[in-house]
Length: 252
Image 1 (spheres, one colour):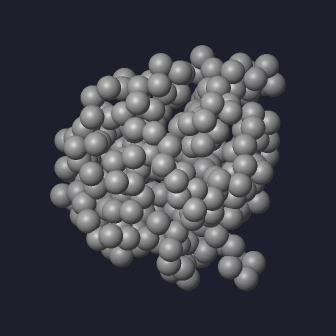
Image 2 (cartoon, rainbow, N blue to C red):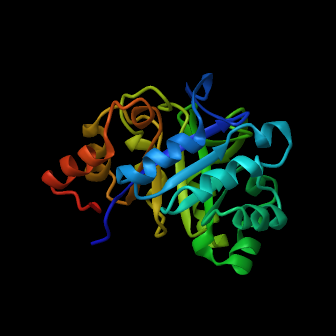
Image 3 (cartoon, rainbow, N blue to C red):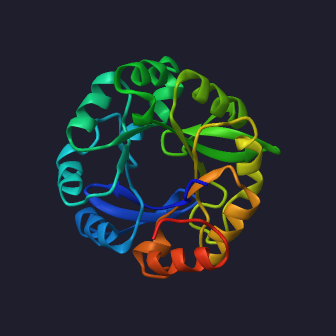
C-alpha cells in the first residue's frame, strides 16, 4: 500500500505567502522561504508553491522567490502559476521545481499537458483544477478561481489524465479556507474515473478532516492544506502519528 502524503501549500502573492477564504479576503502570512524551511524539517512529504496572481495578471511566475525556496528544501517541490507554454515548464524546472502544476494554461491550450508530458515525463506534469458547484454541477474555474469556464470537472479531470498528466490536484473553492473538512462529495465524483494520483485541497481544519478524507475518498493519495499548518493549528508530525494510530499508512 502506498503511503498517503501530507502536503503544505504556499500561496504566494507579491513575494509573500498569503491566505484567504473561498479564494477571497487574502491576507499576508509570512515569507515563503521561512515557511519552506520550517516544512522541510517538520515531516512534510512534499511542498506546493503557487504564484496565485500570475495567471490573472498575465505575467510569468516569480522566479527569484522560487529559486530561494527550492534551494533551502530537500523534499519534492511542485510549482504553479502563470504556466502557459513549454518554455514556462522549462524555466520553472530549471529554478528547482520537481513538478510543474498547470491550471489556466491547460484550459487555454489542452495540448499543453500532453506536450509537456512527452518532453519532461508525466511524473513532472500536474494538472491543477479549481472546482466549484454551480447549479448542482461541479465546474472548473480559471484565473485563480475568478472565471467560470463552464467545463465539467469530471470530464476535464479525465481528459487531463488521458492527455498525460501524472498527477491531479483538486482544489475546492466551496471549502477553501472554511476549515469544515475536505469536499469529499466533489472528490468522490471527480475521482471516480481516474487512475492517476489525486491530491485533495481545500477545507482542512483539524486532524480528523484528513482521516475522514482518506477513509471516504480512498482514491485520494494526499491531503493538502495551508493555514492550519502555517499558523500551527495542526502539527504535521502529530497529524501523521494520529493517522497511523487510526490505520492510515503515512511516511514517518
